[in-house]
Image (cartoon, rainbow, N blue to C red; front, side, top):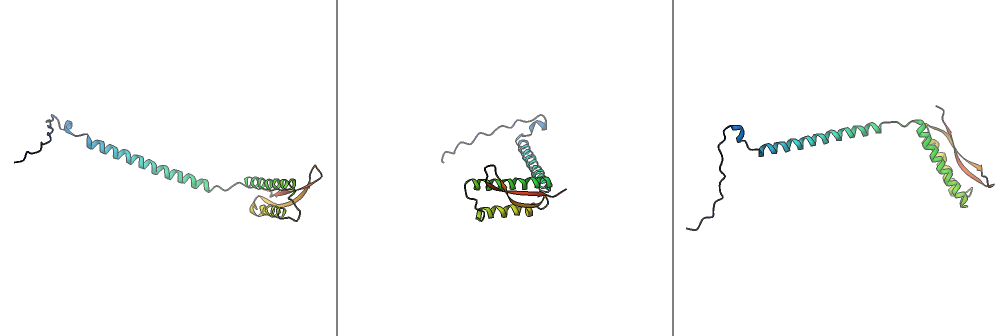
Length: 143
């Protein structure tokens, strides 16, 4: 007969005096980890809902008309600045495409910001060095 492989040694189970001392802690550790994972998952779900509600509330805020007027004024100032730079570089021909594009963009401000701006006009203003520049002038709506 072939020699048999050695059997692993069996652990001896000690008899317990009370049933409470005999319970294994491995089942309890698994349950604790499951509870921790469930708690973290629940917390993550609550945070997702809270952030979504916060974003929804922020998206529903209607801008104040004074803020819209400020945005239109900044846009008009950018157009005026671009016209001044083109005039300094000699690229601002009164019948040219640059001036036409800037005039159209200025007039578009009145329709884009209609609640805050009554009119937008592209006007020529004298400069200190005897040249002329163009600017976008806005007329605000009264409250």
